[in-house]
Image (cartoon, rainbow, N blue to C red):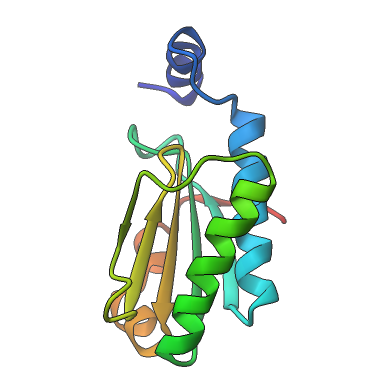
Length: 131
């Protein structure tokens, strides 16, 4: 399935436009960076994955900062008119918090966990989106 086909299917189903998804993903990236997120990236994975369009990847130096970033991302996406995440995982131990907004996913890592999992390397073929 191509990004264009998926986009047309979403519009028929009342889903978000790619521009709206990008706007909220950018808001999430900025929120994480504003709370000290390290090397925050926004990746377009729409041509590779059928389940989501973009990944925001960032990391924090300690679990308190990871939790703070997750809270700020959720608040800023809501302020921008977005919905709450469909699912949040990993908030208790705060080594890898995943906020699934459906059309985009935010990964907030503890720095050492980010180095271990290396999502940037896994998705190296994805285009980076300037934010």
